[in-house]
Image (tube, rainbow, N blue to C red; front, side, top):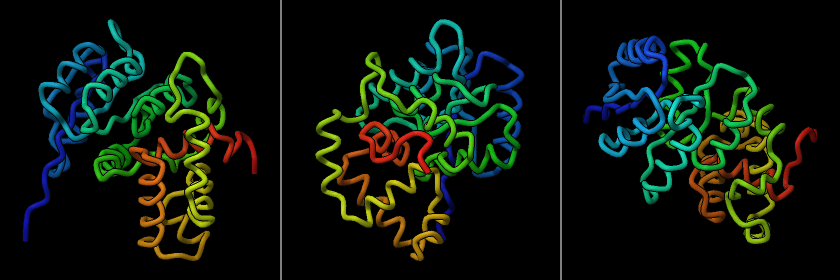
Amino acid sequence: MSTPAVLRVVIADDQALVRAGFRMILEADGGVRVVGEAADGEEAVATVRRLRPDVVLMDVRMPLLDGLEATRRIVAAADGGAPRIIMLTTFDVDEYVYTALRVGASGFLLKDVSPEQLVAAVRLVAAGDALLAPSITRRLVERFARPEPTVPAIRGGASGAAELSTLTSREREVLVLMARGLSNAELAERLTLSEATVKTHVARILSKLELRDRVQAVVLAYETGVVTPGAA
């Protein structure tokens, strides 16, 4: 039986105590190893390029270069092989986090996250999922899912809408529920399907729409009007 690979993590935060605390929590788990730290956005970009970690914990607000621009540069330079990036914020509503989701982050956490939630989040995004279930994420997406002329869309507006037409009715239903923040388990219960079937639908949606992960699928759903902020 093969031994599971150890997840390699970089922590980017301008507060040394926050980095030390997260390192201690993560390294208490035998399956996670912190391979590097960064105190600002420029250092974060350089460290990620040098160490090529599996997951990055990225603070939103840092000196020299904020977490948003650092995330944009890391994803742009990776040519499809970018690490999974989890944004960190002190505030439960932060418009910068939504923008970070648009440029390739896989989700976000509040800095008061519990040790168990932090480790689970790292494992979740490393497995290719996204942090969409917490109610705070749902509120954030619904508040800030509006066209922003200074930030490129996930896909071109008309192109994105056209590609949505390739989805089956079931896939479109799954997309809508994903955009509402439902996890695979919740989707399976709502649609009376197995989780394996739900995962298949999600994979097909991402493939058809040429998206990297669930976060980008949610952003596209809002940008194209499949789901509208505040709708039931």
